[in-house]
Image (cartoon, rainbow, N blue to C red; front, side, top):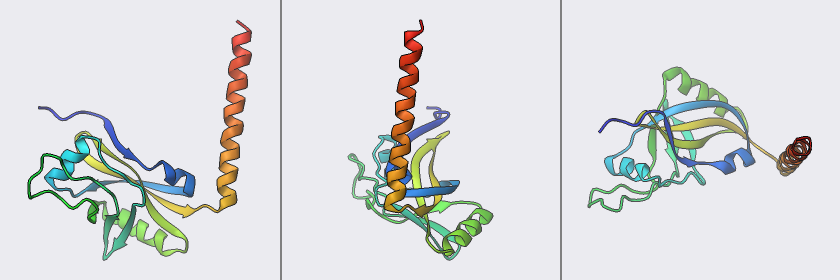
Length: 158
């Protein structure tokens, strides 16, 4: 069976866009076991509370939940194990520099398949304060209202 082409989304961390100011984004490969891949292909994963760290020149995805494969045997994987991420050396060095500065962390935004390979989208992020979150919500509401009013006005002109 040929590999599917394009990007197939498995899991998305929507709350990250609400809780953090996102800066640089990176695409990383994931080192997975067979049952993890099968579980991801079924569309089962969660990035709630997940984060990434740089330890000894390697990037690790922590706290990501990939449930056990239903048809797996005793070789099934642990659901919240630490998974190694594959990045170029320059990207790892950049992530390490940016996270060593105060208040920045690495947040996974999405897990997806790109041309059949499991990938994770990472972002360097700074935490938002409560008033930042309120501003974001207010701006989104204003944008939605203006789009609605424009649509109503355009419908009336026909």
